[in-house]
Image (cartoon, rainbow, N blue to C red; front, side):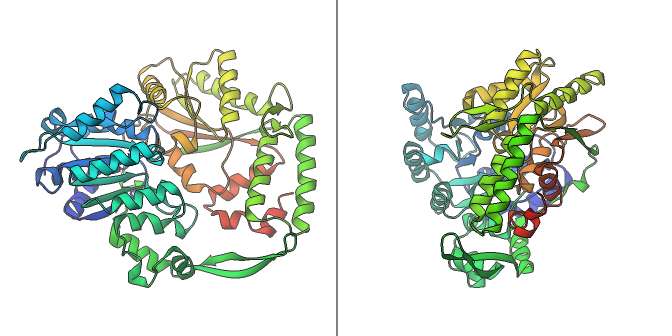
Length: 495
């Protein structure tokens, strides 16, 4: 094996064990170099003529990070110089330039050496388009492909279209890898589709020929009755056979935790604020209505989640109109935004030059925060759905290279996976996503990884006093899954 960058001992050990496997997963915690491990493994397979092309599917923006940062950093120069690298862009797919680059990729003729290697990078979102699917199908017909699914927890829902497309495509790849630090986020059921990507037969060994059988094998259920609709439903009450699941995960993948590295400590703190009078009135009214619905037995899990969104909107200082299109501000100035600005001011006064990542949950929050940063002359970049994939990539590069840019504004669901942002040593969670412990941990580790030079990494949660915020945060940090979060008796005690 050969390397451009020297692997850590744990990377070398896992590469030695996995380099010739047809399919396996790397389940290392964020920051332990799964991407480098996958690239080094790809180089080995290319050098040994087992594959002659590589396809990487990753979250939007992360696929570009592979092409622009990870490949140049870790791929041996001779392969890098001779490779054809192409990032599929849905926005540009209809242009002549994009079409020409796509055809050039398919025209690449592989040789007996490790030259002329096609590397195709596609986002999960792009894989939802027919044009991209058609192109990927041609790519598989043309080459013997190593198929890498980065942040594979994006394909954990067996009923989702992107999961079905990834699983269908995996059938045509002679070698397959999945990468994720959180193979199981909300529940053990998350493992089903990810390991099926590696092998269609993986779950048949325990008698599970489909997802329903899998859920029955690892979940315990009881019948429930919704008095509002008059319908019966199955309610998940717990899990079983988890030792079997752990064994299968260890057989198909490799897991490492960050205690093997000497990283700076994580420091956690909270910044509390008091709701404004309008927000408090709206919040209390929502509480009264919710408790009435809960007592009446008309709430399903989906409706409960919907109500929780309203509570969080109220604590963030706005509520939607009756048409649910325009969000109306409740109190001005917004006290939650004020608490966050105070945090940024304190970081600036520390004199240590800390850069911060500000994580918000909703697009509306990002927009309101951007307006506040502009008003306060705080230099920032956005990395969320309001900017194109190309602009996100440019914004990430600017944050990493420009000392004057203080804030990286993003959503945990957008920028929380696949990125390395060690230039930041502070994280401010503007609000918290309930029941998403894995998403939270992924976001935290964007900067808590090798290359972080600060003495510590600071994490600040903005919390509204005497609201659901405190309960959500406690529930999240105790690693509770969504089933625990939605337990009726637990939720009732919050109001």
